[in-house]
Length: 324
Image 1 (cartoon, one colour):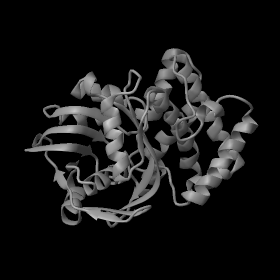
Image 2: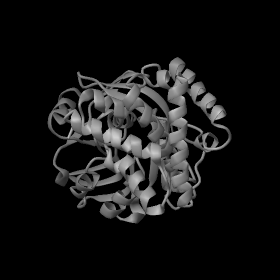
Image 3: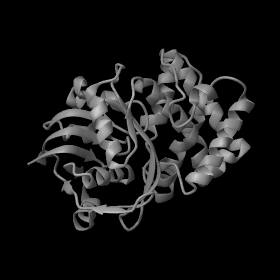
Image 4: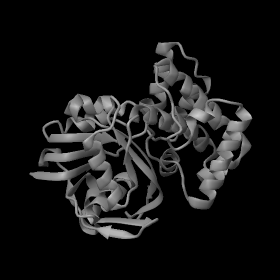
């Protein structure tokens, strides 16, 4: 039975980046992984390349019953079947839990398993790619934002963010995590809509005027959905989605092309995780993200034509390529 500071569910790119940095910094970390990935971690440890080069051994737990307690439980898996995955850890004592998954359903699912008081909101503006040899290519290190879902700053969010930041993964505690989570979701929906069709490195389609235009229109539709729920988007996310949602479309497109230049110069290898999944033949988190937006839009009477088109396109890719 294990008692650890950080239990990380998912040992793909994001989980490995967090786990490796925290373990190297001296924190007790358990990677909750299965099958071949668990075997690789036991044999080779966590290996990170790209922005930094590091390798560190780490505890690996395959049986959920072996996790007795964790000060912080972090979910980094794809959003597919999250409820079932979390249910396996319902017997563990968890002080705080947060998820950096795509979408905005994640906090409710955490609350169902560990109780609402344990839940923190979070989003990650970092990127990486799991390589065939088991190492992870770390390509982008901007920020992991952590905060209380009800708003305001808290000691526990600040403590966790300091641990991450001092370990080498940039992080800060924020007072408006709900707005930031929805803002990231708006940007993510836009990225998905273009990435799974252009199928190229991020900077290339952001620089393209057509790609930038579609992305901006998708962001504006998600903004309409957020506003219908009383949620204001913010510029404190991957993209300045509040600014992108106002003003002229031409000005917003120009802003996105500016981000294309930034990605080209600073993160030329960056690929959206969903595109990585398509290229690797992995199942896509369609229903838990795009499907959620479409269903919520229907419930609220908010028209989301481009989001719906992206949802159907992603679902088609998921089915016809044999991912499901």
